[in-house]
Amino acid sequence: MAEPALAVRALEAGYVRGVPILRGVGFDLAAGEILAILGPNGAGKSTLVRTIAGLVPRFAGEIRLAGASLADLPPHRVVAAGFAYVPQVANVFAELTVDENLALGGYTLKRGRAERAARVFELFPDLVAKRQAKAGRLSGGQRQMVAIGRALMVEPRVLALDEPSAGLAPIVVEQVFAMIRRVARSGVAVLVVEQNVRAALATADRALVLAEGVERLSGAAGDVAANAAIAEIYLGGAPAGASP
Ligand SMILES: Nc1ncnc2c1ncn2[C@@H]1O[C@H](COP(=O)(O)OP(=O)(O)OP(=O)(O)O)[C@@H](O)[C@H]1O
Ligand SMILES: [Mg+2]
Image (cartoon, helix red, strand yellow):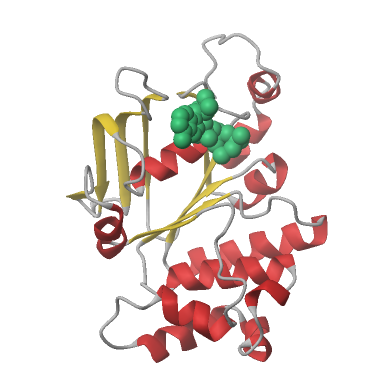
């Protein structure tokens, strides 16, 4: 068996030593697969992707990308290893054009920048007509395309998106999830943090539901969607040994 694109084991992490926010989280993610990270506000979803990205201290556990440990690498080395992270806010340079945003996404590349930008435009053809437009003047959906495209410039093995559909109109949410499916079909493993539970479960292959830094449910997206415990988790019910 090939190594998973991303493997996380028994991860404990947090902002203050001795105060873990994540308390033993684990999953595997294969190339071309979409994993939704779900859970109520404050569950630790952003902390999870930010820990993998090297932005939050890890206290225990393992993070492996295609078999190689990412643990404790600084953020730029995590990117270089093949993990790209798109934060929820401030994920494009509003004053720069689409072309300039993509060029910045690939600024560490010694060569091949134009080819990679061309691949991004193949994936998101709607952006072609906007190449010279400032990102701040684009629609919400187009801005997400630029943010995702910028992250794809380094040809990551794993792409993590923190709430890519937040604040978007329902029809645009659909477009964002269609983009995510297109990215996954190109062979990238996708980790997507979402509040939009229904749309995320309709798109993802698998889902992991966190509450208070621990895994409450995980499995095939369809099984998680059908599990009665999910509503109770979002309503803040007491753990009931829930499993799919
Ligand atoms: N920079 C920080 N310093 C200290 N504590 C933080 C910091 N960021 C988040 N936390 C705490 O970590 C916990 C998890 O927060 P996190 O942002 O990971 O949750 P989340 O699941 O992404 O929530 P949301 O759905 O609201 O985005 C919360 O208790 C939060 O207060
Ligand atoms: Mg968050």
